[in-house]
Amino acid sequence: MFMTKPMEIEARSMEIISPYLSVFNLSEEEKKIYSRIIHASGDVGYAPIIKIHPEAISAIKAALLRGANIFTDVEMVRRGISIRTFTKFGGEIFCKVSDVDVREFAKREGITRSMAAMRMFGKRLDGEIVAIGNAPTALFEVLRLVREENICPAAIIGVPVGFVGAAESKAQLMAQEKIPYITVEGTKGGSSIAVAAVNAILYMLDNSRGLNEK
Figure 1 (cartoon, helix red, strand yellow):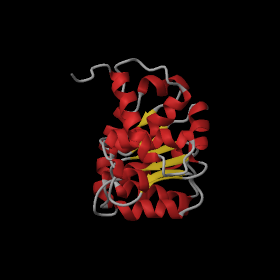
Figure 2: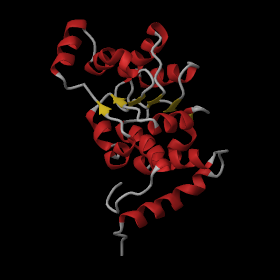
Figure 3: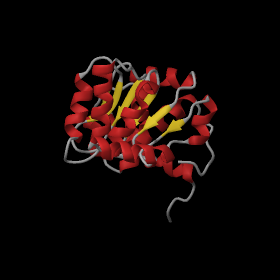
C-alpha cells in the first residue's frame, strides 16, 4: 500500500533524507533548504555540493518580509514558486525571457535571451532577490552587473544546470563577496532546485500551506 496524503508523503521523505545530513554541521534553517533541494531532485548526492553563504538565509528572509520582488531567468522557476505563500508578503515575480523586446534585444546583441532579460532588468535588481535555475549566461550577466554597474541584489539563488558555463558561473558566484548566495557546485542544478530553495525559505516564514501544495 502506498501513501496518498501529500503532507504525510513529504514528512516521510524528510525523515528519509535526515540521516544523510547528520554528517554536516548545519543549522536548522540550512537543513530545511538542503532537505527541500534533495527532495526536489531525489538525489542525496546534492548534500555535499550545496553551498549557502552565511548571510543568505537572513538576507532572503528580510527581503521577503519587506515585500521584495523575485527576478528569475525562466518561467519554470516563476511558476514553481509557491505563489500562495509568496504573495502574502507583497512582492511580485518577474520573468522576461519570452518577451518580444527581450527576443529582439538578444538577437541584436548576439546574446542569450536569459542574459538579455537580466541586462534589461538592470537597476530593478537592486535590493531584490534573483533566482536563476537554468541559464549560466543569466548568472554571468547578473554578476557582471554587480561587478561593473554596482547593482546590488539582496541575494542570489544561482543554480544553473549543464555542461557549458554552469559550473564556472557558480564558481564565480561563490568567489564574489558582495552578495549573499545559495548555489550548488558543478554541473548539477536546474529550475526545480531554485524553486526548492526559494520555497524552503518561504515556508520558514509561513508554513500554512494547503494539503495539495508542494
